[in-house]
Image 1 (cartoon, rainbow, N blue to C red):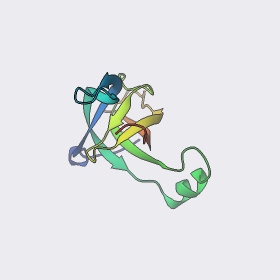
Image 2: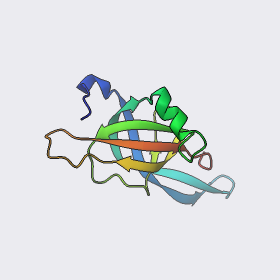
Image 3: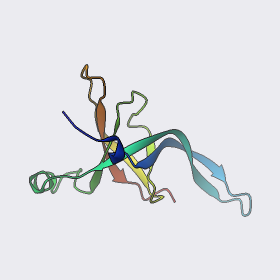
Image 4: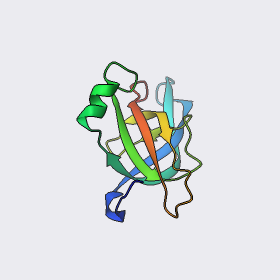
Length: 115
């Protein structure tokens, strides 16, 4: 079972979708992030053994964040972290136990197509 202090959740992630639109100045098409859910998160690190295990897989260039369990999180959402970078959700490890406080580990991969 994961143990976190409330002070560990000191950053905010925005979960949302991408909407296509047009730049009013020049008419070029643009992609805009539309936030739907804002959640506090705690960054999670991997052990060296875990890093060696995922080397060469699709999870090699991913990061992990931990959020309180939320059924609204799904792989169709895009995540914007405080560094203003956008990430795709490539995996969700939900905690469906009967504990009072449960956490989800969300695996994120940088999305370079959204600016």
